[in-house]
Amino acid sequence: MSTPHISASETQIAPVVLMPGDPLRAKMIAETYLENVIQFNDVRNMFGYTGTYKGKAISVMGSGMGMPSIGIYSYELFKMYDVDTIIRIGSCGAYTDTLDLYDVILVTGSYSESTYASVQSGTKQPDILYPSQEVNDALETAAKDLKIPLKKGIIHSSDVFYRQDGDHFKKLYAEKNVMAVEMESFALFHNAQVTGKKAACLLTVSDSLVTHEATTAEERQNAFTQMMEVALSQAI
Ligand code: HPA
Image (cartoon, rainbow, N blue to C red; front, side, top):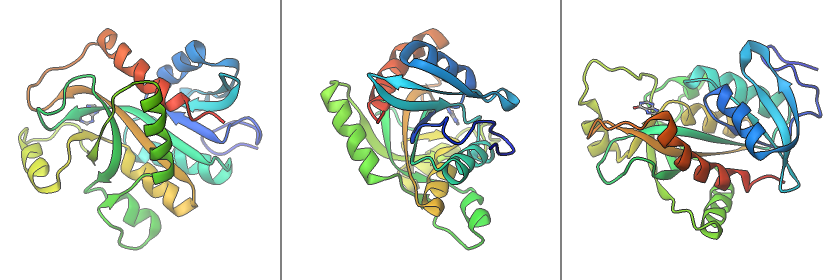
């Protein structure tokens, strides 16, 4: 079997899939953390791999950037490959100076102006969507065991990276209580909801809209490693 965007056979994808935005990050995770690795996708270079972590099965695949992209891949994984749980592992920009670069965030809700959910389902949908409480609880427990601090909160899932008004985030922070911005979780949470599956999202802070600090690729690695260890704990 294959779908328009994934060339895997039915049994090649594990029940739990981790999704970084960057397909090369998926490759790096598979090479660094997994054993017995097979590559199940290379369509459009959106690499996907399945392997074992501490003896348990897990898959990792790129999502691409933005809701249209993660919308396609996560729908096909949930619906056509019967994947149970997708955990996005991404980066975000801070909307508040109470967040530091490299903090790891467990998303408790995703606010968006996006029409993705309403258009996909054909009926008006709420502008805030939620992850699976069960998966969030499991991630929190894993983080505690690993002694990795997590910050929890609602984030902004945006369709636009470059806005004309550079200060727009102040209003969003004040009115919607969103601590940071990324571009995928809203569509992922919606797809989990309509397919009856589970989703969650872990983020590391890679830049700040308040201070304009940004991390380098090398500096991001350590924070990313911590987030990865929390996510990989969900292998089954
Ligand atoms: N905006 C949107 N998405 C992001 C950002 C940002 O500043 N940083 C990381 N992902």
